[in-house]
Image 1 (cartoon, rainbow, N blue to C red):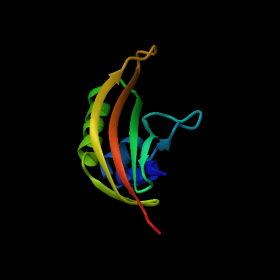
Image 2 (cartoon, rainbow, N blue to C red):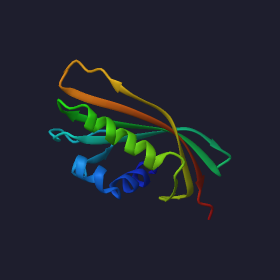
Image 3 (cartoon, rainbow, N blue to C red):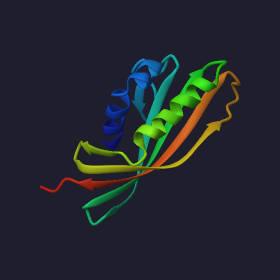
Length: 128
């Protein structure tokens, strides 16, 4: 899964790992997970003849905090780490992520800070 490659890259960063206590999940967090945590999902958009795959990547940061500056700075750090970074592994020889959008999502619970980050990704599939 392409999300695993991204998680490995983010957990290699000391500030991100410390911020979320290593809590980065695919698709959803386990029930009862304490914030802050990060959730990553990837949607296959299309596959160019089995050689190149195109994905939409969504990263959500969840944090119950009064100080919104901390999750916002972490979101910028994620963009800085992933934008145009070359990643490999999990069946892909080259993965490039391209930053698309970042914004704060308004939640009914005003104490929850949720930041959404979106990337486009292009991945070369390993050829056997």
